[in-house]
Amino acid sequence: MKPALPIIEAEHRTLGKLLRGLKTATDDLVAGRQSSDVGLLGAIVRYIGAYPERYHHPKETRHLFNRLRMRTTEFDVVLDRLERDHLIGEAMLSGLSSALRATENGGDNERKAFARNVNHFAEFYWEHMRIEEELILPAARRLFTEDDWDDLDCAFAGHVDPLADMAERTGNADFAALLARLDTDAVAR
Image 1 (cartoon, one colour):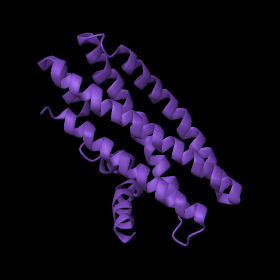
Image 2: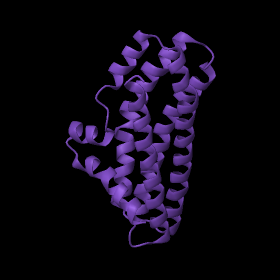
Image 3: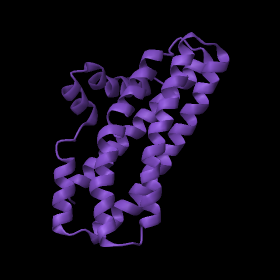
Image 4: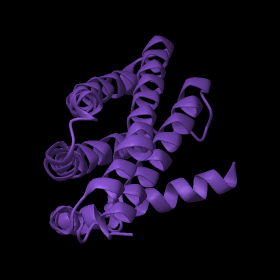
C-alpha cells in the first residue's frame, strides 16, 4: 500500500473519534451532567477547523481528486459532491462555532440547538468519509500511476498524527492533549 493511503485513513479515524467525542460531550452538556465541558467542545471544533478544513481537505482536492479526474470521468459526479462537501463543511463548522458560543451564556434552547448542529455535522462528515473510503480510495488504488502516487505521497508525507502535527505547527499543546483526553473519556464511560 502507498504511504498516503494509511495516512488519509488514519486522519479519517481521528476525525471520526473527534466527532464521537463531540457528540458525547454535547450529550453531556444537554443533559446537564457534571462532566460536560464547553472547553473540550471548543477544542474539538477548533481542531476540526485547524486541521481537516485547512490541511486535509485541500490536499484531498488538489492531489487525490484531481489525479483521479485525470485517470477517469467515472467518478466526476461523486468528486463534484465531495468538493462541495469540503466547502459546505467549512460553512457548517462556522455555524457550529457560533452555536457553541451561544451555549456558553445561553440556556436549554441554545444547548439543544448546538446539539442539533453537532448531530447534523457529524452525520455529514461520516457520510463524506464513507464515500471517500468506499469509492474514491479503491478507485485510486486501481487507477493511479506511480507518478500519481508520488504526488499524493509527497502531499500527505509527515501527517502521521494530525493532533501532534498541529500541536507542533501551532505550538498549541491543547491539540496534543485532545486525543488522549477523548480516549480517556471513552474508557471512563
